[in-house]
Length: 38
Image (cartoon, rainbow, N blue to C red; front, side):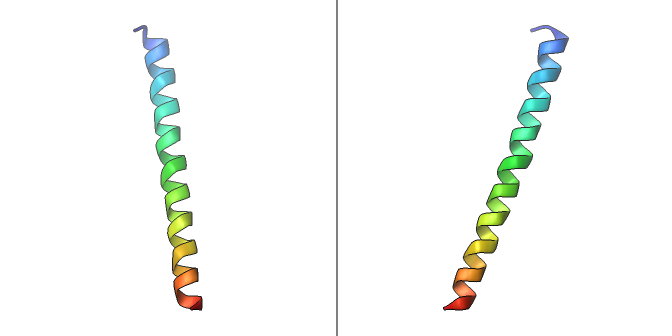
């Protein structure tokens, strides 16, 4: 793999991880709210 592709892949991959963890934390917030409202 060329360095350019490698760099691009890493940036996309890290972006994907941050997005996923953000979504996960949002889901956890939703679960907490649902749990508290019961």
